[in-house]
Length: 220
Image (tube, rainbow, N blue to C red; front, side, top):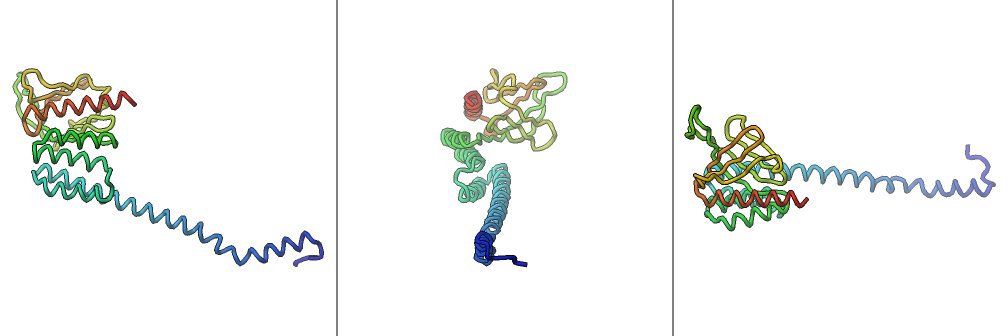
């Protein structure tokens, strides 16, 4: 029942509703469209992230296998989607280090990655001491990552890896007797490492990047 339209206030209210009602679908659609666009963007970003992770994992495996050109191709795929992808820049530095043995070029890529929240990635060998002696018995290989606010060692096999803040480490230094080696002292353990190239230059590069990482964290 409409009621008495002779009252001016009622007349204007009904007139407003009559004009507005046909427009309601068009007012609602932009909201629905915006929600749909946000959902589509989320799916695209998720898909892109999955593609990046797949490419990065493939690149890391190629680096292990000394297939540096294939690793570069995978990393460039990621950088085509995101030119400031910190992890891709970091592993490109690793490629230049092991393919060209260009320590300065590798450091520049590592530094660029560090500024974006990444860091430096090295393949290392971790030595296991023999029982009852000081000789080094065997080695396990893995990744040493100096990234953001953490130092991470991930061995290829076993569960003796670690992830620590630089502030929580007791020591991260080059060895005195074998200067091609370096060690990391944690609160409850000591790790000796050989750089992948086996040379002192790479050990010095690792020390330099660790110092940059530590300074970066102290300035925050």
